[in-house]
Length: 319
Image 1 (cartoon, rainbow, N blue to C red):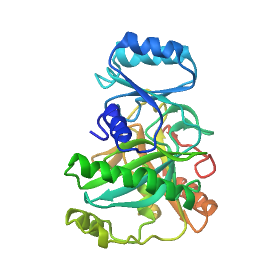
Image 2: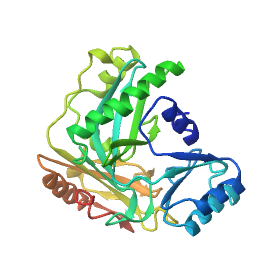
Image 3: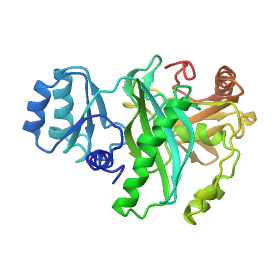
Image 4: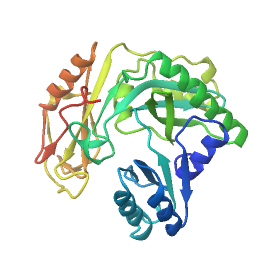
């Protein structure tokens, strides 16, 4: 439920003092509409249930908020996931992601990452499942991390224990780095896409060993080794995504790219790899500096081709 219900997770955060945005929960359309007609903007509206990463809308004004409310609660575009909504205070800052694993007694964090959700360069356009990632996130400083540990990670662990959750696995923390430090946006209980591709590309330790230690409740004995430098991961999508797009185009990948790409929305038809989804694959580049990692990622993209291939050109430089 930490991921499956936004209202449950927000109530959990509030109960255990996890630093997060102020919020209200609405089951009733008229009550939600009345609130949105009188609140200050911007506001963030979230579908309570799972909505394939598209159930969050930043509303700049009342008209946009009412339109979003209608889509979620009246038109039911998320098949019931938006029948209950969470309306949040808008947090100003830079988003960051921190993957972690837990054995129920310890939460062991991975490197930070910076996802780029919007479809166009300059962080413009509609939200997607993610168009690219940089790891580590330069905005997650030692000071920010210290606040994250104290105000988010440790209090989450206390909550897991107090609630009696029998949980071993992944906790993905989506945070906002604000002037007041890190604040939690959401939990996921799975590895994020495309964050995982960047983070694990820098992991020197064996992920399987970490998972086995989590299952055996030995994370307190576990240290993760990381390669120095940066990783930039760029998503290659079908033309038209995140709206309507065509499928079935042949994908060409140069053999020299081995180990530097991750297939997503693609499938085999005979011996041919063809597009079958919006986000088709992602390509990574590593380097000692962020600039070098970005340069290597975009050089690797030149080794991939399919009809209608689209990607952002500012991953690694966009805020």
